[in-house]
Length: 114
Image 1 (cartoon, one colour):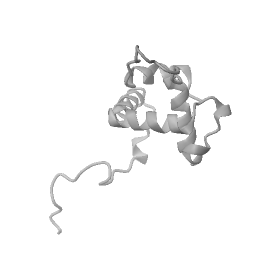
Image 2 (cartoon, rainbow, N blue to C red; image 1 turned 30 degrees about the vertical axis):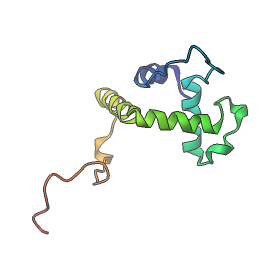
Image 3 (cartoon, rainbow, N blue to C red; image 1 turned 135 degrees about the vertical axis):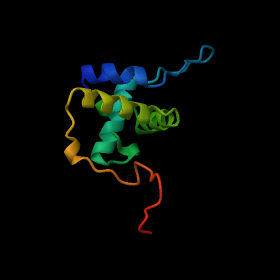
Image 4 (cartoon, rainbow, N blue to C red; image 1 turned 90 degrees about the vertical axis):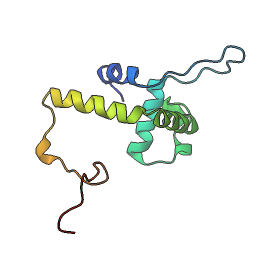
């Protein structure tokens, strides 16, 4: 689901987790597989608990926890910023279709009409 080229851009931006040495437990699923699971849930709209284990993404709870951890670490704004800059540099964005609203960009000053 995530191409090798895209993964090469994304992998360094995701936070790395240190592994416990004394009681390491089971190996966690690779970040790439978990990212595919997160994208699958977000794309299909299914509930986390119904993510099929047969797809190889890990459990839905694992994907949800990794999404939460990456969100708390600020990975998503970094990913967005880097990918947007790369697409812009490659002239692959059509800025005429861009919409800016207050949910993404805060107002700098009050409107004089109000």
